[in-house]
Length: 394
Image 1: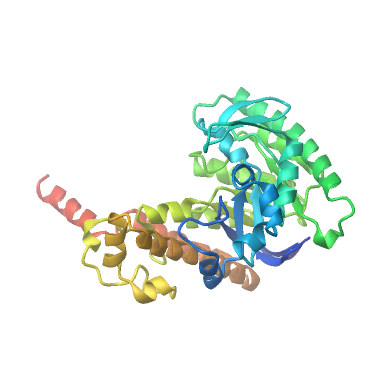
Image 2: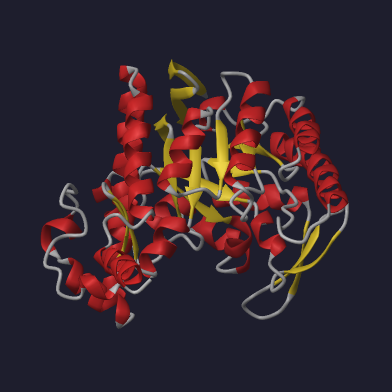
């Protein structure tokens, strides 16, 4: 299922094999919640070399329904997507008040965002949904508390509930896959919780390891926690996991955070961060983040990134994309989103190649330096002029 091929320090190059084929790790998944990445088609994903996406099982259960999707041939056929499909359980929605109505050891009660109807999702029901959807990799149902304003005792409760749900998910998933040849079965990943507390995280990890999942995820990150705390948790989980099991860091999509996580042994990533930021005018480039909506780019005829070979950078200027974003035109959202996803796809290709060649640290140092430099405003004339005026006028 997973083969570790090469290590460079803590960074790992491997191969994840699923019923739909194999994909090299580390890799980043675009978020296709409703079987579509916002403003991006499956042919766009194929053109940029994207290898995996993740969709939301709970949302698909509500509309159009797993039975309908199964009749249509499953996720892959319906999307006309050739890569690997993950499905999230829907646990991510639990921290949103618009969805959550209540939880118990039995399961979670969600409110439909479409019609307000109530839905009880148990671990067993969640596994039935994901198996019916036909994804290559399913995720356990877990409790994901919000990082902000949550007491440690609440996170401890989340660990307890996530652990007992993991047992039921594994038992149900094994039953539903009974009789299916191993090469054709859906994989199942367990998810650890515990926030930034090492003792709670270890408690969660130990409970999961005993169940021998196909892979393990770090849940509850990307919620505004300190970066160093996030990195420590990744290292902690990797340390106690077998090498032959992939580690999936959920919800992280910033270039620097991805590299930091790869260095600590993470293999798989997903986040809406790249496309969400693109729609807001934050562009990933070889020179760091580009804040495209700044006025200084209104007449800029250059591409988003001179070193990028995507169709957006070959055909459109910063000025044009900026204008379309300001007008909230779909074409602007598509062009910016395509570029950001393309950038991350190519970055992960470079990461894999650097691990194979034993020079991952050099790649990481170069990329981090570019992003830190851009973040400090070195490449921003507006900030430099502001600083000059402040100096002149005391």
